Length: 116
Image: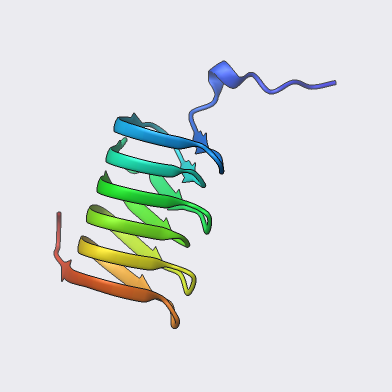
């Protein structure tokens, strides 16, 4: 039987039912299904996903971001943000590219830039 060597993996998953508060520096692809309040700083070129059950309040600095769940705060993304139809977002978005799927709920200031 093959085993996954977790020490060699570079991803993060914050699961549903958990609550986190603080400053987070995350490496590799990251998925959030938990409630999180604070600052998220992703590694260079790393992808962050707020899952449908995820609730994030605070500031995010990342490359690419996909939002299926709830976000309140300020986002700085150097790549692309994809906002899915199940997303609820309030605050400010600063990104190079933004894709908004029909049905998403937004109450934001949206800024697209060459680099953020």
